[in-house]
Length: 264
Image 1 (cartoon, helix red, strand yellow):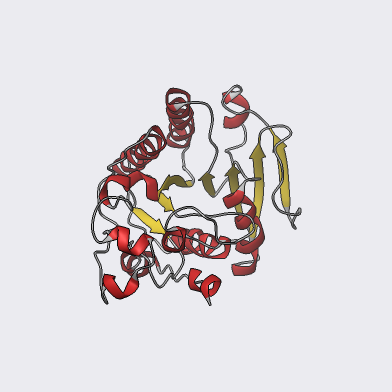
Image 2: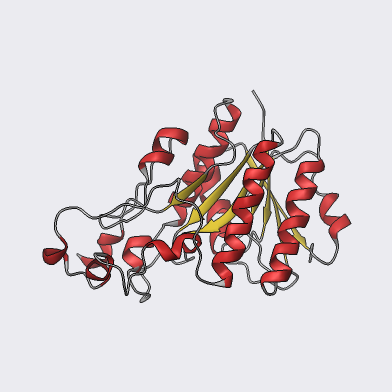
């Protein structure tokens, strides 16, 4: 049994990365982190146990990034940079570098619910406007749930960059590497409700994000990972519109938080 799991967090001081640093060790004490972020990036969580901080613009210094990969068990790609062109170039760098390793670490790439924005449009497509306005009496007891298998259908450059990550995830799977894309919901360092329309439906607690990463990595360790998949990472929200049954069945993802606590 391994004594530790070394995790490379790219963009590790941000909303998602700070939550992983806090909650993953609570799920398994063997997690150790190399946290890469831009020099001067604000740390959204207090320093934890067994983590190393690397101030590095790895897009500008790709060889320094590649030097960090030996001995890494899991890469979680959270970083963003520039516009769509630069972002896709950085994604190329990350995935090509992982692909070149033998053995290659598992990689979890950041997609988003915004990768499928065209499928639900809270302002336009019934019944989602009713849900967005919390008009639940008119909504009825059930509503369409977007399947995890739904292909990317973005409506913005932000969604386009996430679709690009998903395409790379499929590509690594075809090469026999372990890769999953996380369609993150709304995650913030305060784990609070925001005023964004229908945030209560897309909200995800940092702890649930960590539970997803842990579930995927554990499934990989057991040799059962469905590489190339993309999953929605949302808390167990009462008025969720995203398929959580598929990640529950395939990787054992069990979110425990619910946005409705903010409306009691």
